[in-house]
Image (cartoon, rainbow, N blue to C red; front, side, top):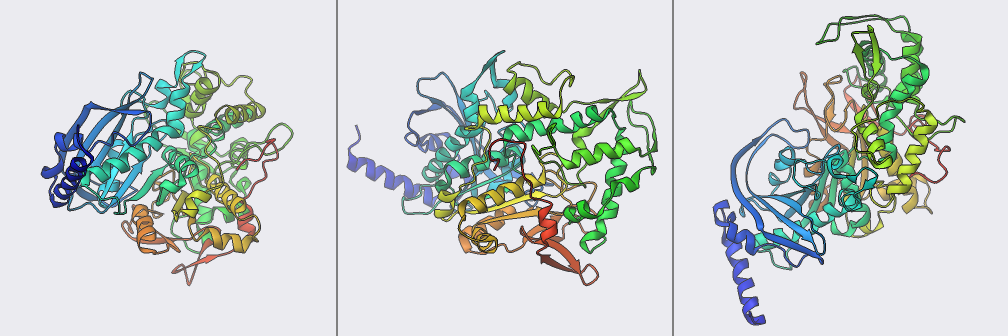
Length: 572
């Protein structure tokens, strides 16, 4: 048995050795990792020491990521598993650790995407290049390659509620607690040394980030989050809305017709922001000023591709009707709004149809993210998609959204608007969303930011509450950007590639990001930096498109604000 004195001596020696280490070879050793395992960090959790794997990775070249600049990094790749006492389960966690000489007292959790909780190699350099330990979890799914849909049902009719909780918030909470404790032990940090804790993610990973900020806000110093999938039941069922629009109108538009509508919308709305550059920075002005009916009769033509023949014809009234109904968002049979939809310049990804060579016609292609949510999480049947949309109406979608909200409010919804613990502990938050996102509606982020503002500052007027919230939480709508990425249809647009660096500077050096820097990903200006205005200010270019102004335009702002009178409870 170790005496308290001996334990203290050994701990001091361990810290001294770790601080003296400079290279990965000094610390990227199985023995050192096992000695650094945070065995007492979580009550009711047992770390499985036999599961530890350790490997040095040198000269890892990472290029083309929208979330961090091209880089070459070295790191120690560590994986270990743990179980919850009384349960025969295993959760795997993975940490990428920079060399001691490169470590800058930072820890970063990375989120997943779609139905994945683990982003894997896509996020390796995201933390390491900034001197941070980079953490990810498999959520208890059985492996890092497994997805939520593969494990959410035990049997038909039986939901695995443990997995739902792990995916909803628990796995990332445990990843962060273990990751911070492991980081301190691995590098021999003293109790008095500050370890900065960050979260970086987008889409489903953004939902995971907010699951932590909303529940355990005082554990985080900062977060850089894109296009979070708030209101999980609404978000997933929303993917079916475009299909039901097509079914209700009775028209399945050819792919080329919808693509032509989008391109024509972009071409018209490009100039509305004061600069003609192929990027629509003011989708709100596009909603106010562009009349889709002007496109009826315009010709379209697309080359053959695979089994799809040449597409040639004229834009129809029904094609425009489909586009307008999708943009308008889900309303119930009484005309009351239930949810929001995509901006006018987002491609109609959810409305994609497939060519049927036997009938020489176009068929609805039911969106899997929406269909699988309904079959597995609501109907509890282990099939990958809805087999048909027969008898599915706008009211059906409404009831699916509300049913999912009721069943998974405490796990998957992630729309709690009171971030007081995060704010009170000094946390900083950068939240961004592509204006032409076709997977998560951009207005979803606006609604959440506005909900936080109104919830946390109920006694202040609009100007006062806006100034108060911007001290620690800023929202940026990214001109032309798609879902968590640059946009091939608007290639000259920016994306906040250095968002993590920006949040680090704000947290550690008090450098406020009045405007957010975005990197142009393609075209003649690839690599250039563009500034992005913070909501509620909207971008407008003056001086022949050379000077960016961030203006307050109430009519434009109003296009982003919706009343959900079709839902019987507040939707934050």
